[in-house]
Length: 574
Image 1 (cartoon, one colour):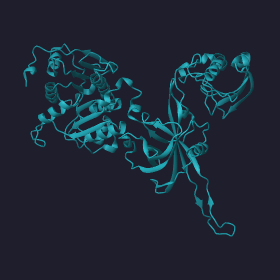
Image 2 (cartoon, helix red, strand yellow):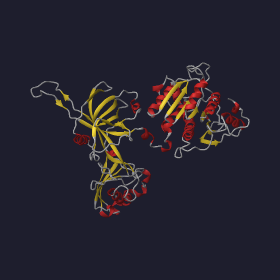
Image 3 (cartoon, helix red, strand yellow):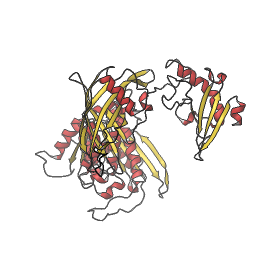
Image 4 (cartoon, helix red, strand yellow):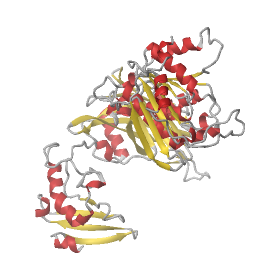
C-alpha cells in the first residue's frame, strides 16, 4: 500500500477476505482521473501480481469500457499479455485510469488508444448456468419496436450433464415469419427428442439496464402488451414442469463500429400451490410459491457463425469430398474437414466400429457396433449440422455387382461428382486403383498413411491438372529421389475377436498425419480463392516422427514435387 500512497492515492480501507484476496477502497484524486475524485474498489486476487487486479467504481457511468452492472473498469485489453506485473497496482492506475475514463466517455472510435473491439451489451448479463438458446446471426436482425409470437424447441437433461437447450425456431410478426432457424440446427438436440414451446418476443429500443431477470421480463411485457401461456412438459426424471418464455432483442455492438441485434431469453417458472399437510380452520387454501425467473444466454449457431473464427476456410461449405477409409486416420481427417466447414461428405468403408478402435478413431462409444462410415456421419452431424454426410458400406475389390453397377462404375460416377477424392485405406493396391479412376475423371486425389510402427507417414496429392500420377510417386520413392517415411520395426497385433492382425501405433501420432492431410485438402479445395487457405506448393509430404532406432523426435515434414517419371507406364493404362 506504500506504493499507492506514494503515488498520490489515498487508501481508505483494506480487507483480507476468505484469507485469499485483498479488497481495497481507494480514493483517486482529480489529477489521476480527469473527472474529479473517484472512489475505487480494487480486488487483488491471490494470483496478483502475476495477474492483474480488478478495479471498479460507482462514481461514474461510462458508455464504454465499464461493466454496466458490476461497474468494473476496462483498464486493459482482455488478454493478460497486456498486464505488466512490474507496474503493480499504482503503475496500472497511473498509466491506464485516466485514459480509460476518457475513452469511456467518448463516442466509440473517438477515444484515444482504444482497442478496436465491440462491447456487446448481452455479454454482461448474469445468466443461468448450463443453459442457452441458439439463433442464426444472419437471420436474427429484427427492427426496433417490433413484437410477436415465437416458436421454439427445447430439451432439459438432468444428472451429470444437466443442460437447458432452446432453439429459436420462428419469430412471427403480423402473421408473417420474421425469422426461421436454419435447416439442420436441431441436430444439436441429439440424442434427445425436443419439446415444442410457444412464447412472445419484443425488440426494445435499447438494452435493458438491469441484470435482474424479473425486471427484464416486465420491461418486455410492457413493450409487448400481450401475455404468455405456460408450456407444460414432463422432465427426463419423470416430474412435470411448466415454463413461460420471452425473447428480448435490442441494438448492441457486434464489432468495432459495427451494430447489430443482441438477444437474451427470459424463462419464467410459475410458482405452484402447496397444500398444507393437515387441514385447519386457519389454512383453508394452499400457499403459493413465488414465480422464478432466469436469463438464458443467446449463442450464435448459424452456418456463418460456426465458420466465423476461420475466415480462410470460407467457401468450403460448397465443396464435396469423397473419403475412402473411415478408420483411425481417415476419421480424424474427416473430423477436421467437418470443423473447417466442408459441405458434403461421401464416406466409404466396409468395417464396423469396435470398442477397441476408439484408441485411435474419432468415434465414441455411442456409435460402436455400427458401420464406420455411419459412425463418422453421426460424428459430422454432432459437429456441423449443416454438412451433408452420406455413409456407404463399400468393399473395394469385390467381384459382385452393386445394384447393377460394377465397383469401377460406382467409383467413376462418385469421383466425377465431387471436388476431391481422399484415399485413407492405407492399401497400396487400392491407392493405385482409386488414383487411376480419379485421374481419368479429372478430380484431384489425395492419399495419407502412416509407416510401420508410425515412425512417420506420408500425404500425397495428385492434382487434376498434373501430368504425374501416384505410380510416378512410387517410382520416385523406389529410386530415392523422394524418401520413404521412417519405419519402426514393430509386430502386428491381433486383438481378441478380430479376424486379422492390425498395426501398432498411437492415435496422437496418426493425428499428425491426418492434420497435415487436412491442410493439403483444404488448400486444394480453395485453390481458386485468393483469400482461401493457401497451398504449400508440394505434392508429396513425408513425415519423420522417430529415428530408425525408434527414438521419438519432434514431427518433421519435408515437401517434394511429384513429376512424371520416365519409367512410369501407368499413363498408358486406360
